[in-house]
Image (cartoon, rainbow, N blue to C red):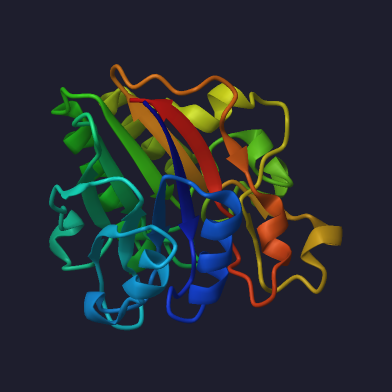
Length: 262
């Protein structure tokens, strides 16, 4: 059964509930994974999405920051969450899809501005998180899908300027190496890049700081869809929906989508 999954760092689900609703109405994914919902679970506007047919949901939340949620038109089961680095952050939730495949919705820390773990605790946290992700991946045995804002643009063609961003958090060699290790240990395939190979430039995030984000086009591919095991992706189905960055009151991220034959 083909299932289309979308992932989107929404940067406040309550602030952008109408934007999410419009996306669901226009794009109709079977499953939508949101990150940075910035809301306690009991204040997420589930009813807005349920009216559009997304009557199944699992979520983890915090007041004002972090937060992950999965909304589905298909029945899903809450498959738990992991407290990465023992900080109590709402950065992960898992849902069991029809057919039994686990879907992991993940929000990796951004890491602050200084790419030095000795002076920047946020960057040290990010590296620790990636190390835990790699160790977790070693033990995986079953087919799974992992989506989310991984806050790293791993390839040279995932950023607007490889040379200028080598010392900028999200594209530093140490982050890229740690993410590659986590991907390798878990046996994950980068579905979007499997469908849209380099050297085509791909971005899913553009800073709010740019006066004209579209003209400057200084983007990074921070949002990812991975799969492992026998979870066949529908060939060529992955898309990055750039136009949503131009919506009214947008997130600085845009949705990424792919379909799987589960």
